[in-house]
Image (cartoon, rainbow, N blue to C red; front, side):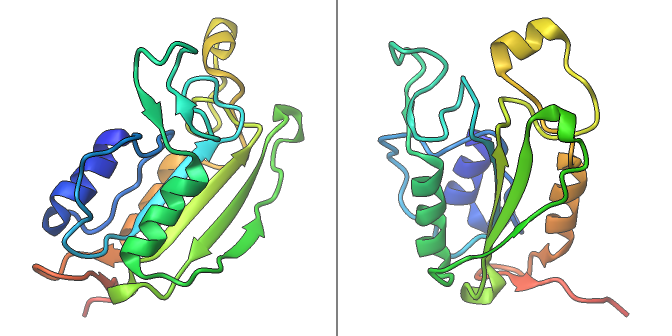
Length: 179
């Protein structure tokens, strides 16, 4: 996820959109703002023991792996870069698996330059695993926390990517029908 952020920041002309999963921007980060807006989908769990939702030390209380901004600060960075609306439109997705102890809320900051939206999948009660139907072994849950089974992260990401395309250098355009 952090590499996706880096690519969108350092080489925005090479990506139509970015979907960093289970990641926040590093703090401090030494990257300049991207040369132009990039649509971004962020999918983070609020109960992730390794990538803290509220920011702070990554994967350890002693910060050996560095520190990150909070998810809200990471979203705010991209909303500003993309010049998107300051107020999101949010919706709660159906709780398809009430036994996983997790739900998903999707918030979209639209109206950005060239259609550069920011979409946050807030996986309430989700840990350090992308949402999906596959169960986790018990030993992994002890390390990574709980997993949401309500959505399929790859399907959600693919849907986001199909809405955006490269149009050469400069701001992106929302994808439309071809033909």
